[in-house]
Amino acid sequence: MPMIDVYAAAGTFGDPRALAQKLASELMAIEQVPDIPMFRQNTAAFIHDLPAGNLSNVDGDSNYVRIQVLTNAGALDRGKQLAVVEQLTRIAAEAAGDPTLASRTWVLLTEAPDGGWGLNGPPTPMRSWWLPPGHRSPACRPASPQSTSIATRTADRLGLGHDPAAGVSTSRTPAHHRLVVAFLPGD
Image (cartoon, rainbow, N blue to C red; front, side):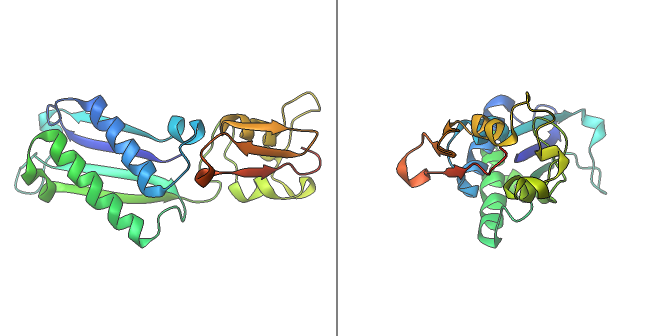
């Protein structure tokens, strides 16, 4: 779910798409999330080119960059916060070809509270995904017996293999990124 928004005067970056991809990749690396489709497809950066007259400080300068990073609450400890600010600032300055841009780049770290974001449906508290079926948020329960359960949808989105008969999903990632999800009764 991590999202990055970069705001700068139009023309600041020669290749905005390459910048977006590099920022998203760096954020994934700093967060230390598994390199699986769920995270690769849902960690993104958006480069917003502002018209020259739409950006200014008090002195009238318009050569500033604002990078806003949105993550799940608690995803970044203090060390990771410092790394995000340092690395995203460095990447932006390199992409602009202007080392002095680092002193004019603001990085804002924002956390989405539990249930304050959604993926593939309504906002869903993450903690309720792992509760027994009777205690889950309605958004985490199948709408009908014919609907795909949240556990199966989650396993599919995470790029996991799953065996409903065994009640277990495992990742197809290297051993140091092994992720196991146990299906709860009713899933």
